[in-house]
Image (tube, rainbow, N blue to C red; front, top):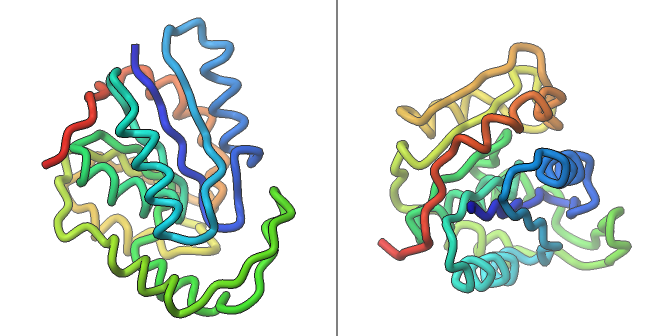
Length: 193
């Protein structure tokens, strides 16, 4: 049995459509797998600590799924724990992408008000993986992503399995079509490099 850990993106949560679609798939697929989509802190260092604690507690094979900022987090964790990861339109340089959001923020999924600072951008830079083991990743990209340039991710993960959907957006409308293929991924028991 494989455990799938879903890491949501910026201003998102386990109630997002992608997370719900994924949860519903595992609930109705009949496969003997488990799924978890935690609400992550809006603060990067805390979010990574939360996810790392969930991974460290796992005794069964694990596959990470990360969307947007969650894809960046999944890369850090995949390298740290030697895990496979499915990345959906992942952020590559979130400290640059999120710099325009410095200041007060409101998460529409949780109702939480919080403040992003330069310190949080530094936390993002601090968790950038120093290397990428391309064999760990399956990249899912939409060429019409209105938030992130898909070509940056495609280049960053050169050598990884990549599925590019022409005309698909940041939400990745075709995500439900990809879900059955998750069952064929080989999870690994977490272990540090």
